[in-house]
Length: 294
Length: 118
Image 1 (tube, rainbow over the protein chains, first blue to last red):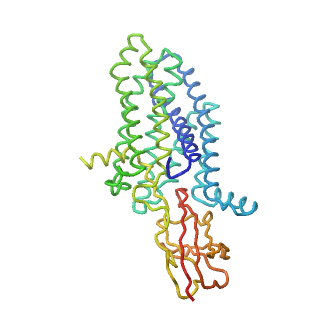
Image 2: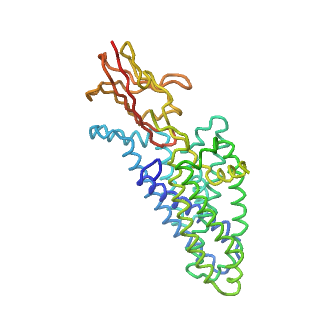
């Protein structure tokens, strides 16, 4: 499907879902729940922490799958067992990819621990670290001209995207689908968070367009371009559901009808997961015009 | 309008634009015929390769592997990856295969042939 393997795509997807939801749990706690005027915040905080714990575990599973895929892609199959063992050690311990992989796994384990104890300030710091990891393992590291700015922009982009999608995941699974009576207050508290996230996405995206996007004319005729179009359609779908929520579902919720919001929450869950799947495929797909060897 | 579309694409795909490592040139170069046997195979990549997980193989036309020294990177910002040949290689056709990754972890691989004429 992409420049990588199917196993790699699945590993990256699990990682993205886990990372997004861990950050989303923190964003939900600080950005939405703390500002919502509802009585039993503690129950929702427990629910968000429980979901965050599962997400941290999913992140670790995704990391394990990615490591297996990376090993299979790079190891010399004709090598001896000792050589293969040494290679696996070198892959994790002596490459930039491996160092970031270790950091991600340690941060996920620590997040699991802190969420289990509902140590939210600690989880906030860990989530910030997690948001930084994709930037440190990605193309931002290769930007020799503005490396620090590009890494910061990339990390902010991941944080903003996770705040938006991750909060939606937590919101759907902890508030809407279990029919919590504080749904309306949470919806109203989430709106400014979504707006700030979108603005951050736009600013960091503007920087990315300056740094990363070169010859755009070749995009639509490539696998990368087609996959990108699928992702854009899915993102547009999430945005459309958000608009539907704002225009129709929230007024119905205010009138006591939760049905419309529950349906759109299911749609957001599915579309959000598909956006992350498209992203998992895109990050392994060569840009248009790239050579893969000689 | 194009700028707007370009911006929207980039805004939604910030960290999806990771470039993959690819081989820019080599010594001997692909399909080259060299008069004297090279003492080393040199690779210039688009990005710095992760030497710890890079493998290079040199084989004769019949598939016999040629011994290579551990990989090294020449000094300098854009120094090549060097696979020194152990011993002397004979006249004939050779295939070089390589597998590597850049700092972003995306695996890349390739192969090329060259001929030693004397």
